[in-house]
Amino acid sequence: MQTRIEKLREVMETLELDGMLIESASNRRYITGFTGTAGTVLISKNQAKLITDFRYVEQAGAQAAGFEIVRGSKASMIQQIADEASKMNMTKLGFEKEHLTFGNYQKFQNEIAAELVPVAGVLENLRMVKSETEIGFLRTAAQIADTSFAEILEYIRPGLTEKEIANTLESTLRKHGADSSAFNLIVVSGHRSALPHGLASEKIIENGDMLTLDFGAYYKGYRSDITRTIAIGEPDAQLQDIYQIVLEAEMKCIALLKPGTLCSEIDIFTHHYIESLGYGDYFGHGTGHGIGLDIHEEPFFSTTSEKILAPGMIVTVEPGIYIPNLGGVRIEDDVLITDSGHEIITTASRELIVL
Image 1 (cartoon, rainbow, N blue to C red):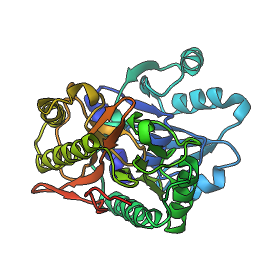
Image 2: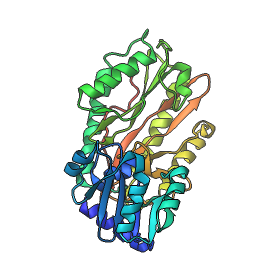
Image 3: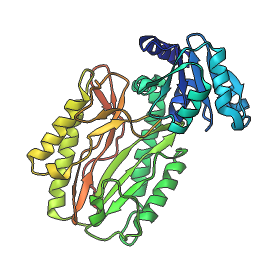
């Protein structure tokens, strides 16, 4: 974690900050290694403190190497943080404007003597490039998802509900080593497969349905994210055509992934490709995003992104086409950016599977 702290201090110097207040759960875990659910981090030019309550003091001591662990009281945590910031001689204290609540900001203003400086993306930008350890965790999460997909295919059949499939997929992920699913699983079928983020319902799977499974494994804090769309019996001819368009879009997009590429260029290319085939109005979300401690994190493939791909980033590519009252298709994979190009780390078959 010491290297991460030093990188953070370099950013702080660039921003002319002599302190950083971290409250985001994912950023706290990234910078400290602490996996508890409560705690505030204070980083100065020469000190690093983790303030938590009595429930986590022992755990924090074991996990947060290089940090001074400060036991705070839940009843007076704001005052405790203010006192520690004062001891660290902070005058310009950066805080995560996207994570600190307005209520706590007001309390900090009243208690902390230092000037509070709002910053955004400081830790998130550091998290974009993964270490070898992080890449290993993400590879394992991807492998668990691949194995679970192969197994769930043996279970899926007409007559089951979307919820039954989602619940079985969740338990299958755990059986193969996941700590849990990476997020609330998306299982949608038939006309409901046109809902990009529809959650599983009591709808019964029928012959002719397209079935979209968007899922991932949560493993040692890191998350995979994969989507496969399969057919239950012979699908509608238009949906078969859409499937091939989405698959081609995904493969063409992935082929462009390499260090130095603007994320906006990836998104623009994918949308233009689908638009050129007449379905631009039915693909309304971004092409993909980074994964790691969060299921959606930088870099994002969007038309406005200024991020540039670099070795060590792991991103999703997930084009889709969704036709109301007919159905939809999305195919998604996790891709590691390498020194020379890319490596797809999810390997489940992308060809249309008809059960």
